[in-house]
Image (cartoon, rainbow, N blue to C red):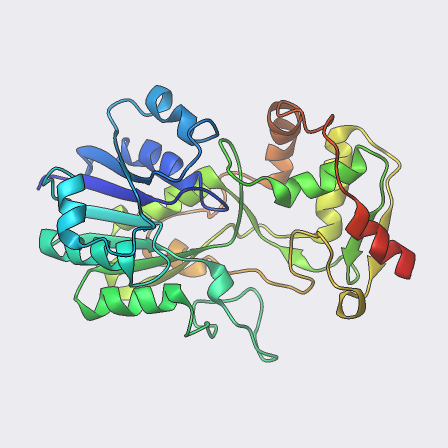
Length: 334
């Protein structure tokens, strides 16, 4: 092995673009000599970022695999990869230590890698009444979650495990747009924005390019990464729910927009993309141990104009039909 990197990439969703962004980042790291993506073949190759692999990732080898195969074994993984072995592994697909998840762990164990990085989720956190925000890595987690069981298995078999917990992600080549689209959909159509609570709740929105840089940051200090093991993966710049609305309105050139606050405990959160209560993480640990520097090269404030003009409008989202029926149910109940 001489710096070969493997990225195991899911079929899409909230983490759908991370394999693409990570591959771009790793190609610029001196420790990495080659990058392979083991891509779930259930992805839609006509959509981003998957349709841009060949054009934007020259030199990256892409291997398609049925990662939903419950009978997959380590031998199957090794066969798919043509017998190649890897010094660095990033798993952005496995949801538990079964099927392909277990097979990838077992195959990686046979390669004796220097690093096995797992992309979990801050959604694993289960804050209590005593939790202090932003949430640190010591916040209680859902122990029964598949991600927690995957981490336990990887550690049990002796992999050099480093776990990352991203939160809300946006950015270029995204596979999921709803976090910001929700605001533009209403502001641009003159519809009210039903935001649960009083709108001061804090959200942490992180650009996918920054997330990829954080995922690659163990290369700065591999020993510390493995020793510390768990890292929040998000920006340290927070906005309130109402702040996001204000910024979106400014970018769209809309001065007159309406926010309606309501009690989500009574009426539910409807289609609102975030939790009704505070739920955001502290990236202090990754900044301290992995010499990441700032946890936010990008900011929502700085990125929104590009998102609106080159993403939201470019996708034809201004012309699409949007279902506001859930909003109406909430508004009619007030």
